[in-house]
Amino acid sequence: MTVDSRLPNFRALEPAQRLNEIVDKAGLSADERALLAESGALPLETANGMIENVIGKFELPYAVAGYFQINGRDVLVPMVVEEPSVVAAASYMAKLIRESGGFQTSSTGPLMRAQVQIMGLADPFGARHALLNKRQEIIDIANSRDKVLIGLGGGCRDIEVHVFPETPRGPMVVMHLIVDVRDAMGANTVNTMAEAVASRVEAITGGKVRLRILSNLADLRLARARVQVSAAQLDSKDYSGHEVINGIVDAYTFAAVDPYRAATHNKGIMNGIDPVIIATGNDWRAVEAGAHAYACRNGSYTSLTTWEISASGDLVGTIEMPMPVGLVGGATKTHPLARLSLKIMQTTSAQDLAEVAVAVGLAQNMGALRALATEGIQRGHMALHARNIAIAAGAKGRDIDRVVRTMVAAKDVRVDFAVKILEEGK
Image (cartoon, rainbow, N blue to C red):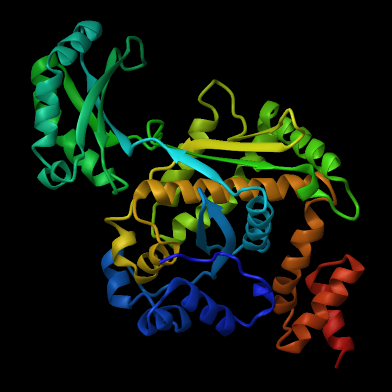
């Protein structure tokens, strides 16, 4: 089924009207519509089986970002997030980027690392060579524990051995299992494999195996996205496209050289990525951990994106980062709305999902840099945040819009001001 991701005037609709449009565009069934329309999509019994000590459920807003076109395919992007302006910014940037050819994405294979820590070694470099000499035997033991994965074309592909000759606890050797986990996130798979090889590793090295655990620095499982936008696409009544492009590149350069700026810059990228990860039931903490570790892989913390000016004067943005996500296992399979999110996106593989996620992150970053380089971040953000403030002040129904308009016009978005506006309107 081909989807049209354009959502004109979507924000002006009521939630039920928006839902009806997404139901039609994504080809959802009546039962699937009910999951989104009614409370209780996650049964308490299911929640109780997912984690410990369950006493209830906690809801977050579920939205859909439009206009995304990725490698020529239109994609509706479900996003679960509490922060105002995130979905609006992603959709608006996707609309601009769409008119310049959309997002171009690619990714590496779904390779994850399991680490096996070996202590108590007098000859760590000798132990490394001993392990490498038994490489195929170790791989075979690892693969003996997951016949299903092997049948799907995955499995342990290789080993790496790293030596830390001097640590506060003496020499340490760390063996990595490099595992193709297919459409899984892969944590349980690689952990099981690491456990399986531990005794043989001890026999080969004469050392003591301690930790046997995956690494969330999934630097072999990368997703990439690229956009190219002309200056004409960025023209506005207040700023020329060339001014906007230069402002964006200057703002990016600040993040590239200064870790204090880079932390906020990358947080903005994750503002786009995390809601997609949450909507699909994936482990957003794992994605965050890998992203920030990858951002300092060269010795200092820096931007996950790059922004440049092409020879023709176009703005060119790219992102490359670890994206350990899956379509099978965990909450992705047990949470009804996670499964529905994948259907709305028409995602067929973990690599597809990874590429959608980084495209949204790049769009979000572009939106933030564009705002920072022009009118400032607060103008658009506070206009959307004003609705939260109005509701917190007690506004309901038509009063919400009245309070929001007054606060935005006054450029004063505070709860006490909202309360005053409410009282004056009585």
